[in-house]
Length: 331
Ligand code: FDP
Image (cartoon, rainbow, N blue to C red):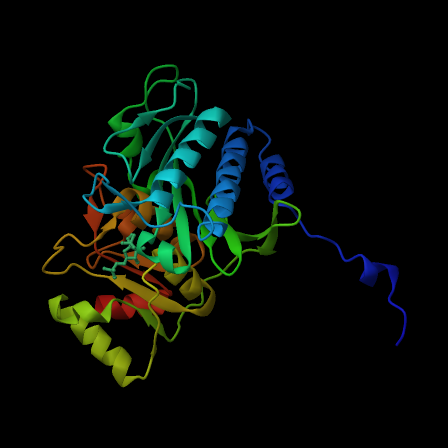
């Protein structure tokens, strides 16, 4: 066996998230560093939640808490923990004046009225998968506030519309933990290295495949879907496309983003407005989809063009590879 070179013995670790954020910021001479700090705060919260999730089977933090959230859904203990962890990290960071969370009815004021940003988030998405050790995620969306600095944040800060997001992303707690985000200029993915406690750039400039073969939908509700969706799904089956549905939005979206595919959550008879929440599920993932070259629609037009009217409003969504989303639209 030939001896390894010094380079082979000590392979570079790669670019850490911190370094990447710093390098990206230096490309904008007038950047103040506040958005950079905010992204670091989100990464920190993600690391803490990752730790909690990893020991969920060992300590009493798995399972339902016996309470309902604002949507009337059963809260899992980890939903509550993730919510608290995120709010605390964003409050301590100081850049965010207010937060909107899936778990809370109204705006959460952080007390940092000088903060320029507001964050809408789903701290732990796919909660029905927590107990069975299946991938779950965090989704976040960042806006520059429109209300005057040094006063309290207002509804308008959160109801600006998806095109006004300055950054968005998700953290996937899967076979490895990944942070994927965009500040509008490309989409980048970072894998968490537990031993270093750092997110390392692993997926540079992610480009959504233009087409794919995967369709992700809850097939059990097919009879409740609108006719055009039933028609599209019949076509997928005729073409022997691959059905993949984890039932965890971040995981399903992430797989399709890397492999090529479409995720569908249409309106149903039970949920005529769709199930997924516009502000902290649809907008951020639509932002990532578009910035990576994919598409996201509600069946009529782009998700990002929907004018929001309330914090917890829902929307049908079809998102992923552009050709596949176009095909849904054609139906
Ligand atoms: P969950 O209810 O487990 O939180 O956002 C809600 C969500 O999960 C998505 O993550 C997931 O894609 C979808 O709902 C699953 O809904 P169905 O069980 O109705 O398919």
